[in-house]
Image (cartoon, rainbow, N blue to C red; front, side):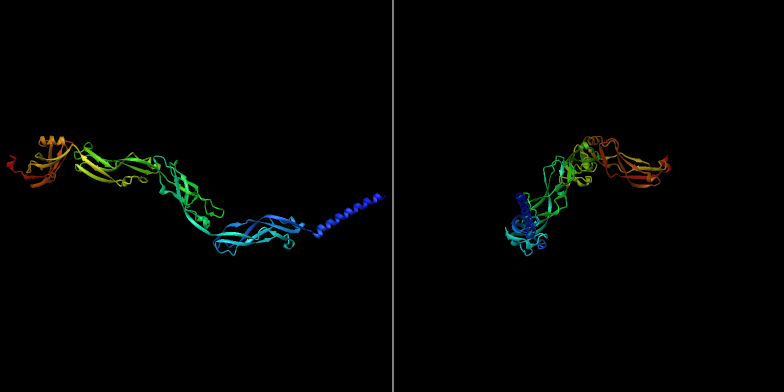
Length: 424
């Protein structure tokens, strides 16, 4: 019986201890000391950028707190719920500044219920730089060389957009000495449009690595890379034969003899291998003839002269050709007035005729005293007129095709009416 009584007493005592413990935990709320580490320290200042400033460094970045509070609050306080900040609104100039840290607790915990036993840091140090915003022109930087027969038109490269705006700390933005897009042109055979990343280079041409504080309005740009086809054209002149002179009698020298041209592939591929830069009438040029012909007017639209010469100098020498004169006495009248009614008589005895052409043929003409060459006088306009007239004659050469004949043949002609004695 006594043993049973002790067991009951033990149970009652244990129950009472539990109740007392619960009372102490829930009602008396005993204090607990504990640390919270790695709490990020933020900086507040909404107008810092408006003042043209930017924070480039902060020391330290985090804070550790030793706290005392009730057990019920421990689970509510950690690095994510505790807010630590510093106010930079009084910073007005570049340089270093010390800012006091402020600690706040979540809304679910009253600040009066928490004691801060220790802070790992009371102040932070920040470094402030001027905020710089600069627009840089974008340049093209090519590598390699196009194949033979093609031309890369570097001055005609089109970049769009043409500039990039960089915003960030002054000391970082000022490192930028050039901004480029790069492309290897070795395999290009036609004009292409590509999109390429933008590279920022320092004074040594090395690419710059920026901090997260630097921003760009774009990181790539469109580039049009013009490639033209090239071709060498042989220059030539064309001749109109005449005046007793043929192409066999011509020695011609051109300077330059060829030019290099370029243009779009479909245009260049349609060109002939030769370019005629002028035409020369052999009947009128002297034995020694120099002339210049402009090149550009002879080039098709879309074709450009690479050499740079604006004209071609042409030197012509005639060989195997001579000039001479001969007096021709063979003067023939055609379409005379009616012979039964009129007497027609030529009063000019000889006509001086100019000869130009094959030296050998002219020698034959001279040896034959002009035989085969005559002057023709047409009197069709004098059918019913009488008197003495000066009529323009025409020199005719029917025998020597390689010789040109010319001359002013003013022929004297007398026309009189027949009388009965003339008829008898």
